Length: 173
Image 1: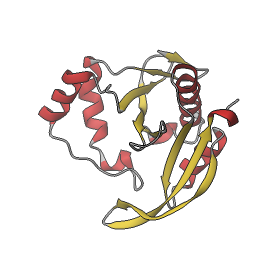
Image 2: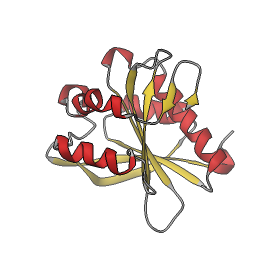
Image 3: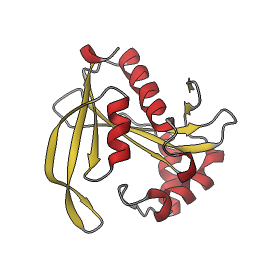
Image 4: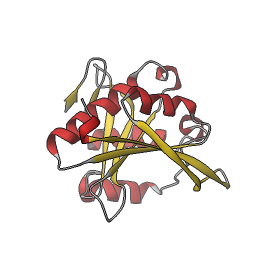
């Protein structure tokens, strides 16, 4: 468990799966910037049984409050095959908990954990055009905007630009 001031990041447990599956497939919760991924429940359960959503190239953590109530998820995945870079993504399920600093705290906690425990030089966050709250999260967590990848993300039936943010080990404090 990675403890912060207001939230904690922890591994996903078997007892979380029912609630997590429900929230993962709620289009309203996911909003317009996080693609709706329809995964049949048996495959969802099978993936958890295989590795607990924790593999070499992809790891998922829950964002929970002090009472261990599920707030959202953090995802860390290998960005590409040619570097030691990882990409982070995050979502808060409860819309009333958004814009309160929880996502920024979650990103900061995971960045600190990753730089302290892995041989990484770069962590990046890619944000679809228009997702201003997520861009603020990246910036508040110390990431620098590097540029725009044009039409690099298929979202809601169209190709959209993504803003690429990065934090290098030497910039991390």
